Length: 341
Image 1 (tube, rainbow, N blue to C red):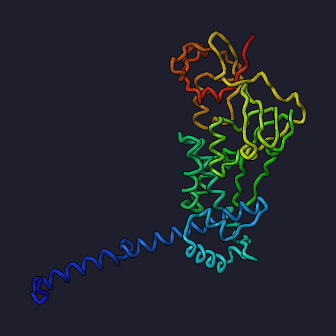
Image 2 (image 1 turned 60 degrees about the vertical axis):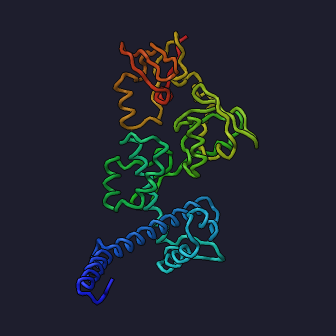
Image 3 (image 1 turned 180 degrees about the vertical axis):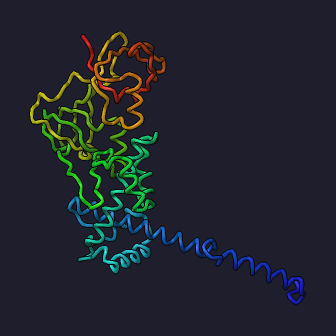
């Protein structure tokens, strides 16, 4: 290539000119897109740090640099820079290597938690997403919704007080209702009560609880509790959990042991030839899914029996109000019945 050739010189000039446009073009240029993405990433990290500190303070333990590095999975140099920025902005403070929220940081953290829990409520009531997906999708949206979008969402949902896991949703003013009850792992044998909260973090333990098909609102009786396992009865089933898993389930104990109705079981426990009456639909079934079950006839007092079984076990067809309705086990688990003798 001869750079003294006017044609080649023109080609080089055009190429450089195009590259400069692509890189520095206002708003859409690569440089500005990169800078915008960097700002978004930093904002997300700041909000995640605020949430980590808020939850730590609620649990009465302190967080240092190593804990944040492990939780956020970012480079130490970037974390130090962001923590310095947050301290300069009076969001957090550091004392003896431990970080804590300042009033402005706590207010910001509550705003993020409000968005997260409202969006989980929205997913549970207005969409068909499986409950295993709620937390991850809410983690994404908590960094995206504006104040006005958040308030519109709250109004659409009727300003709920609790999310689908039983966690209180902070109000716009930063207030929230208390979660009553005790950890399942701390209850004594023969205690009866109702599950009012299932903690969704850490995700690994939450998925174990979901895999056991344990529901918010279910009544329980503790059968065994020690350092090795917690065993309890609920809705016709017996469950065994490790204490570390049981600790993430909150139970409001009944004042009177007779409050537990041990004759109430799940529709999935019904066997061919047995008859039953519908008692209720579990709190675990919400929104459109709940309305569909009611529309199909699964209302309190309705007679129900198995009409057809599937050789593969799922779904099962039930006869109710003169119609045959096929339900998957996951749906039948959310309908409570009393078998007729």
